[in-house]
Figure (cartoon, one colour):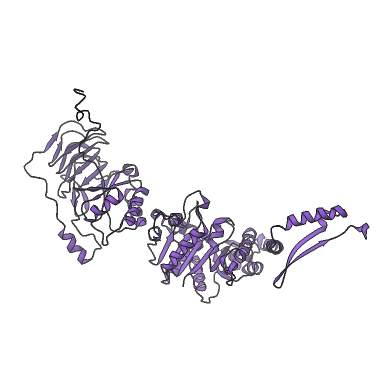
Length: 270
Length: 250
Length: 84
């Protein structure tokens, strides 16, 4: 049984691609066969985050157009054997992606026995984002604890509830999860940042993961390593927890409290 | 033109066989992404040098027989790397069936798989050992001696023998031989020995400033010269699949 | 962080953000399910009503409410004071 998961957010720059890459790695690490697809036509990034940019010969649109076989276009990850990447096309033609084409590729992946297909959605609420979510069984909505991201996420939740195949056919709808990124416990404690509870309350959804704000994310993307693979770091652990929860495990949220500081640290070393 | 009726003398084309530099790519996988990655990695030191170079694909080391679709993927990968596939090496019987389908030439004269690649199975190893070495160049043929400076764009080729250049080989010039290449001057251009597959051929020069050195198709491009070799008398030889360089008399 | 910061309370901007979001999200959700023709319908209705009664443009409210399995089109027009 294949599960199609869309990673989406509405707003750009909140960490969709970072999240797609890390969730895909995390799922594949458990031995599941995983494909992660970049839906951002014209602006591909997933290959860079995954560190496989030098191996892109064919892309998603090539497969849809029949320029090559799916097998030729799937890039096998060098670190995890069961992980495969399908890069986005660099074409400027936004119409290159069609609902039928996407369906065809997904069906082929399903026939190949993939356990999970992750769809890395482009930002915005245009066609690419729409197609990325259309066939999804589940959605991970990536949100930063900040007003514009929360508002955009709410719009995306509205689309998930109406403009997906599951919603249209009344198959119980798409199962939605929130994933908070760039979370700074210190700033939440100082009252400068929305808390997990605030975001949960406003969007009315449960949180599947909270990723702390960390320079690790940037250095991992510089290196082309999905940050979940930087073991021992908070971010990697937090993504690991999110993957476990996606797989149905119950785990308490971690890295959400400010490290307690003594009076002297507060005074002399900020 | 002597006579109008003599159509053959007024030919529209001239024919001549030429020796051309082709990059031979021996495939061990048909995965386009893996091939692109390695190709672009290997040529990264001198991308200009390989820009639009002709490529000959060698299918002899593949464990599974590729089909036309797979081969098209490889050709696209080569194209992404900035090079052009012009033919298949005659080292595999498959080349004869696949080449016409893809509009490619079948090219001969390449060195056969002489040494098993590192991660091969025992079975593949025995097969590899069965591969025949091409006969070495005929002995007793005197070397081709070239006394003038070889300038940029020029090429001197010692077919079936050694080449001795008693002057400088300039930047952009190319000297090659089926046997060894000896340069009693500075080597600033490219030198290729064992062009038709003789892995025992060597390159010698009085003053090493090479752009490229190749022996039996195994090459190394020099963006920056290793300090211990620059300007020194140097010899190069092939140790298995590895090109080695040392100072002469060091 | 210096000594003074210990005594100065930073304004809790997160609370402001939360309040703003609560309102805007509620607002957008209510208009989200609405069919695209609502604004046009509202304008045309307004024109018809104005043939007979001179009402204020803001006095016509058109909404679609979900009531159980039914969509209910709700129309409210507040008439000017002197007509009553």
